[in-house]
Picture 1 (tube, rainbow over the protein chains, first blue to last red):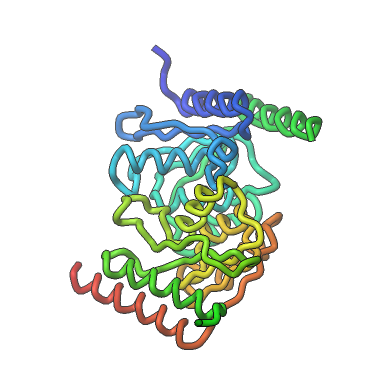
Picture 2: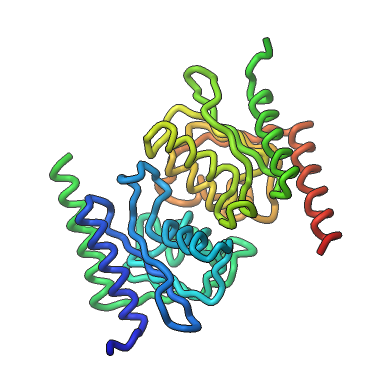
Length: 158
Length: 158
């Protein structure tokens, strides 16, 4: 049996990102895990094109789906895995959902709001104290490469 | 015929906030207006309790509803009216939706992200250049009062 480590869950998030890519969506994936049982709650990818909703980032979709599944507006004792550093919308959604831990792979020097720019989780008052952990290494590189390829292909077609 | 001024639209947003209050939701309302025709696109109020979704702030619900109505992920040439200064989630949603103007009534010294704290629209890079306008005066006071009464009542019941 595969041990369900943070790398295991991030790999699942990366699979979601690849699914997004195959649907011509921005390749970003997210996975929500119950920290008590170390089991999957739900997973999602970016669906901004499919739904024509520019807010439908992987993390936001994943969190809202989990709220629907549980019938609860907060998701205590859970960990969110995302292939890209959350933007300000998703970082705030993570705080409102009271996510305990958030693992991310690639940093986002353009739109990230966790380790870049406005660094909301530390700079905005009253944010829930989510622990953010960057998983560097090969998964990080895979996520960066997936995004690079996608945007290169988009530029060729525009 | 009533002239449809910004105050007129904000009054409609305040009516939405009052509707929220009557449903035991946080009394915040939002209205989206087509700037070309000066007509209503849609309106909404906070529904975080009803939907058990902590992201369902008035502005976010209003914008997503308009995207669904129009089948488009951006809402150019529109103005959003909201009774409270947007939080970081809603300010980012406003940017992603490419809202031209955002009128707000009460400032939010606790969670606001437009004129308070991280001031996302000016401090976060690549935000869409939404023009933010605060409508001060009696509507602002009405919005503040509505929120004060709501939270006082909540404290009494807790």
